[in-house]
Amino acid sequence: NLERVCLLGCGFSTGYGAAINNAKVTPGSTCAVFGLGGVGLSAVMGCKAAGASRIIGIDINSEKFAKAKALGATDCLNPRDLHKPIQEVIIELTKGGVDFALDCAGGSETMDGKV
Image 1 (cartoon, one colour):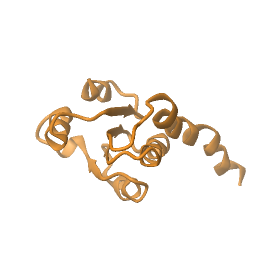
Image 2 (tube, helix red, strand yellow):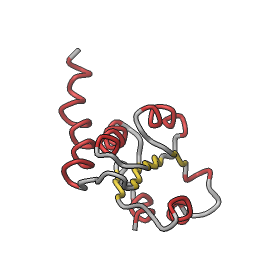
Image 3 (cartoon, rainbow, N blue to C red):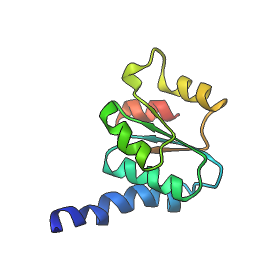
Image 4 (cartoon, rainbow, N blue to C red):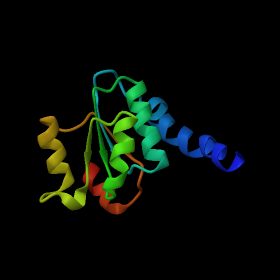
C-alpha cells in the first residue's frame, strides 16, 4: 500500500545510499551503524551489499537487534547495557576501530560515540 511503499523513497534510499554512495563501504571492511530504525536498517543492508565483513548495529532499544541481525548485522550493542563508553567497546571488539561509522540516529551522544 502507499503508506508503506513511501518508505522506500526516503528511509531506504537514505540509509542504503549512505553506505553505498556516500561512505563507499568496501569489501572486507568493518562498519558501525548507530540507530537501527528504518534508515539504520537500510544502512546495515547497504553495508552487507558492499561486502563489509563486520557490521555492528548500535541502538538503545535491544528489541531491534533481531531484525538488524536478520538483515546483516554481525553484532549488536545497546550503549545503556555497557559499563564503558560505546567507542571503547567498539575499539576492543574490532581491535582498533571501524572503517566506517554511519549515524542514523542523529543525537549528540551518537556523534560523540563515533568521533
